[in-house]
Length: 104
Image (cartoon, rainbow, N blue to C red; front, top):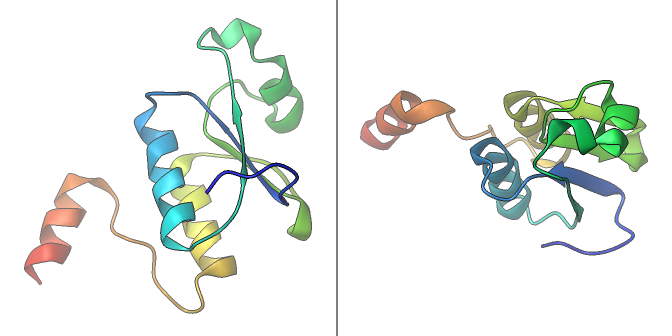
């Protein structure tokens, strides 16, 4: 759910699988967030650079907890579940983890 003026802000790029992983976690945890689409050219991502010190996406900002510019989708998902998951564990990462979790 993407809303304006949320305490969670996700810098993302359309079509980015790592961004989709973070959006999926936000959705599963029923968290409202503000989506900020970034240009596809890394050289034009000055806002992401200012926030996180790098130009890759996804990047999460959590104003409530003072998180400014957290990169790396796996780290973001783990953080979201730790902070907002009410004891739930994050879903397995990668195709092998998802297949194994479905089997066992």
